[in-house]
Amino acid sequence: QSALTQPASVSGSPGQSITISCTGTSSDVGGYNYVSWYQQHPGKAPKLMIYDVSNRPSGVSNRFSGSKSGNTASLTISGLQAEDEADYYCSSYTSSSTDVFGTGTKVTVL
Amino acid sequence: EVQLVESGGVVVQPGGSLRLSCAASGFTFDDYAMHWVRQAPGKGLEWVSLISWDGGSTYYADSVKGRFTISRDNSKNSLYLQMNSLRAEDTALYYCAKRGTEGSGYYSEYWGQGTLVTVSS
Image 1 (tube, chains in turn orange, red):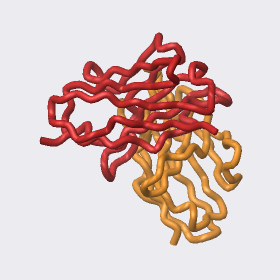
Image 2 (cartoon, one colour):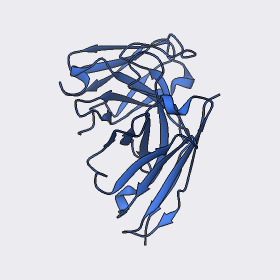
Image 3 (cartoon, rainbow over the protein chains, first blue to last red):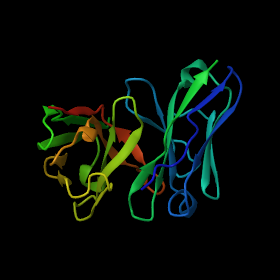
């Protein structure tokens, strides 16, 4: 049950696009299309942004998109805005019927 | 509106026990599996435990296996986490979360605001 690997930080200027990677193994990310992404602002509970690799829940901006290739999933934020500054976590279902989270990425809007 | 309200977090000594509760409303509780997820101060999210809709299946992170027990009472729309043999490294904000409605369901669609457990002498 090792955590999925994410970059510690990613930054971009307003209007730019950024991509956050999430690397696992064939027992989690690579084995299932069950990757989800969460946004967490300081002092707040996590908020679901993407589920099942690339699906957006109702109410989430279409500036957020997800994809997967092999053992690595990605979250792309396009048209970066100040309100996107937050921590982002990926998560995956695993072959042990458990879940595992990523190490987390701090997004900074310059 | 879906609401998840955790309670029971306190300061407890190492080796002690504690039971967390999560009161659910706004959805058909016994239709969904439920999780506990924790976050140590200044750290990332850690998945802790999952229980199936009927309580018949339970799963645990290696870090809590044998010490924590997840349970639910569908008649009370409540989720629980019994925590025994607590260690300093169990200090965290504990969230309950509801499995998803759309697609696979293998994600956390709604989260509570968390309850803080501090293990310290």
